[in-house]
Image 1 (cartoon, rainbow, N blue to C red):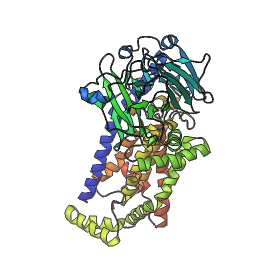
Image 2: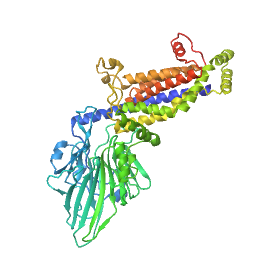
Image 3: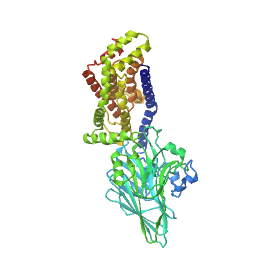
Image 4: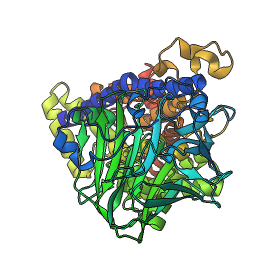
Length: 613
């Protein structure tokens, strides 16, 4: 039985560590992030990211590291952009082409043909639909500037950050009406840029470059996305935010903002396809050189610049393109800027041929569980029913059905232990305080009756990978953001807002402003704790006092731990426990085993003694 004790002590220690880590590390950062987003938008209703300089030598890098992309030009104002001016004032100070689609609104800055004003019509800062909509891109000079830009290098007068393009008067970019920008370089090159936007978040930029001069000209196309800020909260291991891309033979590269500050510059091998950009939890920008599936050789780079205002940048520079006199060359690129909705990202990977574009969403190490769980089960159920909470409940039923054979085997073993309880009591009475002989006799009984004494742990252990996969899905997927359930649960990605200290909303005195988050027990965490307690007490009482203590305290620990988890996860856990109770009760009755729930409860409160196994 020493092995059993060690097993349960290990489980208890793990639960304790997870609880402390969740309460004192993860949850404060989740709450800080939420409050920072609200405060940011309240202070500046149209807040977004900014522009960047690309020709700087990144911090922590040698000149040789940046040389591959060192010819990417920059605007003199970019290195000083620090969010001094009001966003609306910055937008009003430049000529722009409006963007207006079903999902997006914003404008293109004619200076640099820069994407620096983009907002998402269908996403709000808070669950309140009257709150400001979310901004993705913001012009240089405004708070939290964030821009994307495409241009050329390789000759004097090449169109870059400071180039002023011309557009047809009254032009507006919509899903059905592209816009054309024009620039004539002093060396005889004429650039006619056609910008298209689909009905989602993908811009296509196609340049017709005509050489009207008498000699061939060599040019290089570049793209960059730059931001002057990083998330307001410390990074959390379950989520990647920072530089991201899939290029070259090595494929996926993920570097956090903090790691980027240490590295200064990362220059992967050259590539002929792929994408690169910057990602947040729910939003991202991504550059696709040449368009999806293109075979355009380019040098990707990820940088952190310290000259002027610190800023983060993903950029690329193509190999030289030669344009003969009198010839016209087509140069294409694409830009994704918007919400990381799974169906949209997957559709772009398939329809546009963008290599591994699905990895923009951080499905994690258990990608093979996490994404199928969402893509093939939970999301289709939501589309059928229209409620993610119910989709979670039905997903749980499906998962339980898949693991039913294993769970049944475990419960049958527990039922057998209950049947063997009288024999176990005889062994304990026979050997008294001789613990070693008692344990040896117990093990012989287990072997003879083909009983696994730790079989009751397997149902919980089996569901742990699914638990973490579901945790990941609820935390990272934008589909779960602000998704309501019923009643007071209006956001499955946030903790249960009800509190026992306010009688679950009957006496709202502001407990959340005074008490630490983990003691603000809501209805669903309490229900989860009750169901977990019932499930564990249905089993025969373990003979070891330490094991009994763990079984009694574990539901309490989990109740407080999950009180700060997303409500969707707590609902899953409570519902899963309920199904397990029903399944376990049925199997124990079928095998002639008495359910030990009432005996264990009486023993716990000193009103009887549970029969030791």
